Image (tube, rainbow, N blue to C red; front, side, top):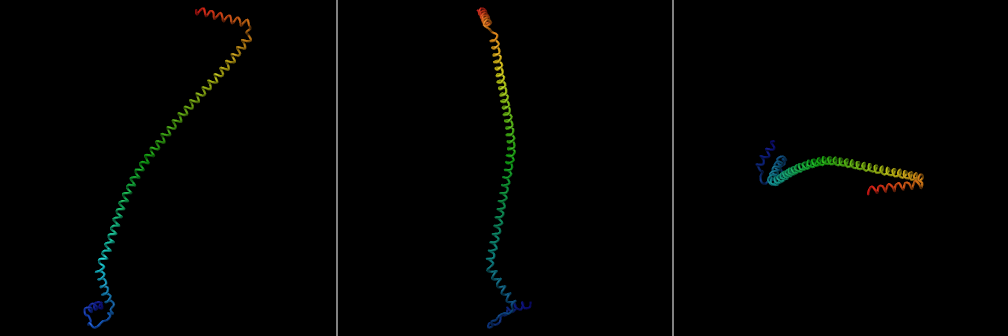
Length: 184
């Protein structure tokens, strides 16, 4: 420590002007050099350093502001998206409910139309059966009538002779004449 104070004291006493030499006390010369360099740096670099720090501070503040704005925009978009999601969910529920009720209505309509179609088919079937029964019944009656007629004609032809035939004709003529007199 004594050397440091001695070197400061020796600074105050300059040697005579004629001597020039190197100061071999490294500690004393380093302190002087450092203080000169720091003084020059502070004097000249203060503005530059201040400007650099101010620019850095402004960039950080701008980045924070931008981040806040982006965050607020993201929150706003998130809220809009949530609102749209709720709206879409409500619409989906409505479509689901309406779809189910529409499906049920269509199912009931299909069942009703199927029953009506089955009823119509049943009616057509019954009408066709009745028609076919009447047709068969008419054919049977016709056949029976033809056979009875053929049997009666055959019996008449075999039983009738000329004399019986003439008597039947005269009896019928007499009946017709009597009817004519009654109507006159």
